[in-house]
Image 1 (cartoon, helix red, strand yellow):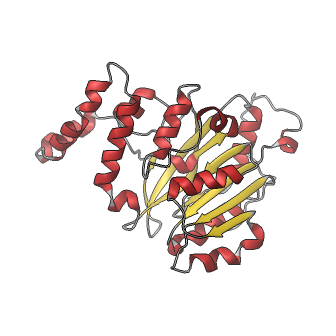
Image 2: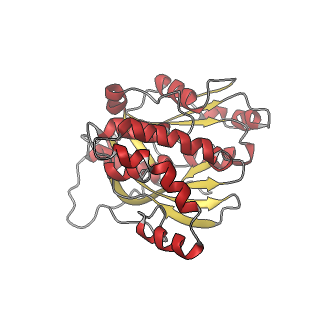
Length: 292
C-alpha cells in the first residue's frame, strides 16, 4: 500500500465553508490496535495506520502476549509506534481501555488487528472533527472483505436508536471515531463484554448526543474463519441480546424479549418464506455505500 500524500485532503464541496488554519489545528487522533495471535493480518493493519500520512497521530498497539510471531512484526515498526506491549491482558475491551487511558489524543478509536483503514481516512476525520468540535462521534461506512481481500458488501447507515436496540448496530466500529469528551462523560468500554462493547458504548453516548454518519467508506473489515465473531456466533448473539435488554425502553422491551424466538423462527422458515421475511427486515449490508 502506498502512503497517501497528506496534502491531498478532501476538497470541500462547492459552497461549503472553509476555516482558515484548520490544517494547523487538526486534533491529535489516538488509534489503539488490540491484538492476539493475528500475525497473518497484523502488519497490514499497522501499515494502514502508519501510512495514513496524518501529521497528528498517536499509535498504540496492545498485544495480548501472542505466540504466532506477532511480537516480531510489532518490533519491526517499534520506532514508528508511540507505545506497544506484548503480554497477557484481560481481553480485548481491557486492552483498548488500557490504551485509551494511556492516550493523549482528543479523538480516540480502535482498529482491530484484522481490519484496516482506507487511505486518507484519518485526514478526513481530523479535518471533519476540527470543523465540527461539538460532535462526539463521527463514523462512516466499512467495506467487508474475505480473508483473500475479495469484496463482499458495505455496511453503515445513519444512526437510529430503535434500529440499534431492535435490529442491528448501524455504526461500523472500525469506521468510528470518538471524542475524548464522550469517554469522559460516559466512561470506558464495559470490560465484561467480549463482542458488543461497541454497541454498549455507542448507546451510552447516544443518550447525550446522536453519533454523526458521513458518506465515506473509511475502513475495510476482514471476515475470516478464525474471527471470534464468526467462530462464536451463538455467544455473540446471547451477549447482544443482553445489551439490547439493557437499553430497551417501555415499548421496545417486549420486542427485545421476543428476539431469540423470532430469530429461531426466521432461521427455520422454508426458503421462500425466509426470502420474504428478509425483505421486511432492515438491511444490514448494502451493495453500495449509503448517503448520509
